[in-house]
Length: 309
Image (cartoon, rainbow, N blue to C red; front, side, top):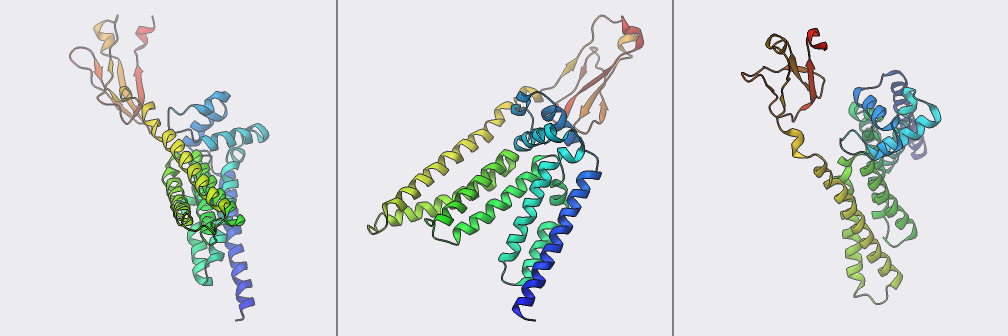
């Protein structure tokens, strides 16, 4: 088989895999009902007031997805596919990046195997068709790593390489806004960029023949990435202060003003994150105690009809 024929076959195979992956994502986004997390995100951040977008008291708010889903909801309504449109767009970008990674492999079989691995993982594909931030973060991380590789393949001060570097760090930062779990990847990208720029700037100190513009760009970019990393890290770490320890302290339930036969008819349940109920026993002092509520969303109390008064 000639090189030209091999290239054509490889391109057609990659395109077929990409179209199959995109077809699966679109079909799933249209026909699979909303999950609990998607519905919670919709009611809490998309259908609520504008300031709800900045409510980070719980991890349900994947900020970038909430913003984009709100825009999609404003233009296209509350259909399932409309709420998932940002993730579908991310899915298209993810598949395009996977194809770019595949083309970068010298061996056609290795490239196609990589394309299959990136586009047939069920967890990845499911997240790319949900109205949540996971799919957005995955696509942005893959794009960031792809741009990082493009930057590393050229001298860091070349104009095209500079653009690739900015794209790499920018996509990594956007991934953090889609899901805070991407902070580790973002820090890794910034570390690689900082080390390369720092090493290049250090070497340039003893090379008077190098342009001053190159030295300024390296140091300024290194400082900018350091500040950006510090800002994102502070934003993520500060979330620990939102989850105050008082949220996990035991809760005691007491009902006053009832006769004993009415009080004994009351039932108190713990409700965990999956909406499962666990009934609590009433203590000798007439109090229901929960124990620590680290895995619970709340309580449910049922009263007898006779206490309607």
